[in-house]
Length: 144
Image (cartoon, rainbow, N blue to C red; front, side, top):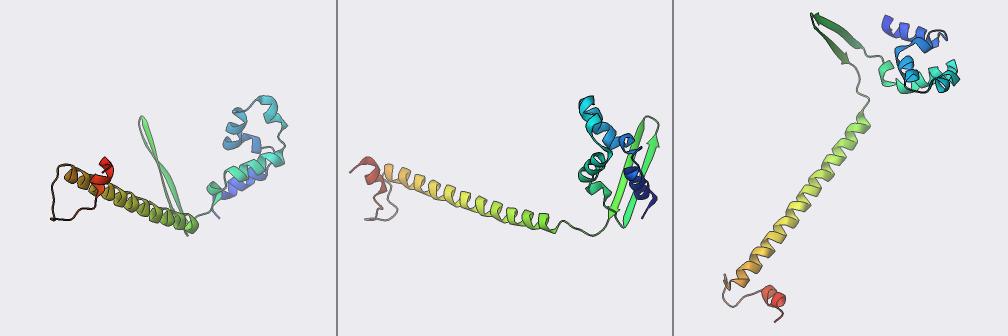
């Protein structure tokens, strides 16, 4: 375990320091003062653990740094580890399949409506592609 995570854990379980944690401090600043004072240290620790769950995950490769240029400060993070998001990816794949199906059904419907409209216009202009053959769609529309 790296020193960063050890420091976080020490700060998390030290009741005098939990209110000074930047995350908890910012949370308490955004609420009325009387409400913030009502939280016990145990409750604040539970809030911290619940809302910073992903931030506490330890990665086998955790490389963070900052580059300071006068007037600018850039930070970079390189994390690597086991992917625990298989269910999210499976849902994304399923959603993508439904999305493709929806597009195909929409295109098929539009093609059918386009062909039908073209056939009605052809019949309205009295153009026969095949002699002595008609679906009777134009006759049905005009009520013959």
